[in-house]
Length: 547
Image 1 (spheres, helix red, strand yellow):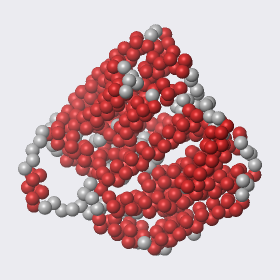
Image 2: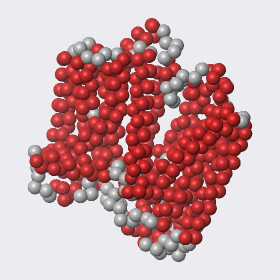
Image 3: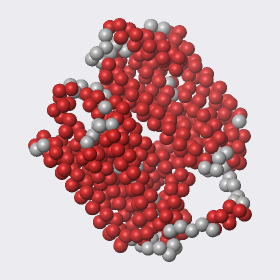
Image 4: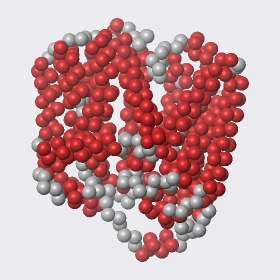
């Protein structure tokens, strides 16, 4: 067991290192931002639980908490299994250790399970807290909470490891395997985001108009849905609501037996699984005809460099995923507002848990329209691929530095590869909302100008910082993608700017008129974009790409 705990400690340190701030000057800010984000998630899930109590679905909370913990286990394991459990860079070294294969696999699976448990606890704990405080505070409920938080991710973690291997194995058969894996991950996260928000929206929208008969039907429907969709959730709901020790024992037994079986299957086939992935991941040699076709192509330097940036993103899934989800988020928000209606979204209370009447919304509609561009500005700053585009080249950055091109062309290609998709996504989102009548022409212009202005200023600051002091000795892409200083500058600085801009917009809208405030934020967006261009121009003059 000593070897198991040593390996487990190593794996937990490796996973925690991926979240560790890489720069001391920004470490405190990153920790504060993480704490604030955790508090926001905690409060939001608490509001969801209160909404369930208000509409008579309190008995569904235990099962819903198990389901949330299961989803956390699936998402985390799916993203981290490739590289933690299989597809290892140091696979030969690990398997050469004088430690039984079962212990090696168990330690890596346990690290995934422990991390998924912490994430699941963040989501499920507020649900249980509301249930204990408002519905039933008993020994069985408390025991159910502890067992649920500890064991809810066990089964989905076991299943997700095989799913992640299957996706990786299938994707490795394709020439663009990383692109396939990236698309599957983005689609999965989008579905999870839409499902959670849609459920919260439905619960808040129904809390005021639901009848007693609808409550009974909703309870029956929720119980049936949980039992069919995820049986362990139904077992926990029965254990807490019906005081059933048998259901609790069945939940514990399933949560221990299924992962144990999965572990045994995994360790028996561990060598074959990694060998299959390693054999299929080798690059296919180009044929003579493909070489002739490629050497015959010509393109402008800026276009070739932009294509290189896109290929780099696709070639590093963690880089692409962290910088591409913001694009999807903008489109999801635009479509949701267009389908449901901006007034319905605001008055439902699904955003902040506070109900607003139709009359109150009518009087504040101008303010809401002026705050909408800042929502898209926040989404835009979550797409800062250019901010770390110099460091991400790593040890092959010398190739770029030897190109017979000025720094403006090289940095301009990195910026254009990020700025053009952001501007296009903002324009598409604004066009969708404009076509459905949710915003007017000025509002659509503000969505594009304000969103792009905030993004452009801070991404150029990040790019200038990265070009001046790049981190070319990183061990994993996460060192520069997740906790690099330029990324931190963009995200935290952009978040502060969005918060300040939204507060100033609210004050100006109330002090003057919505039209004056709208024109003011339009001018501010143009000013921010101009400031970003000045930062970029200065960076091009002062940067010497000599690595």
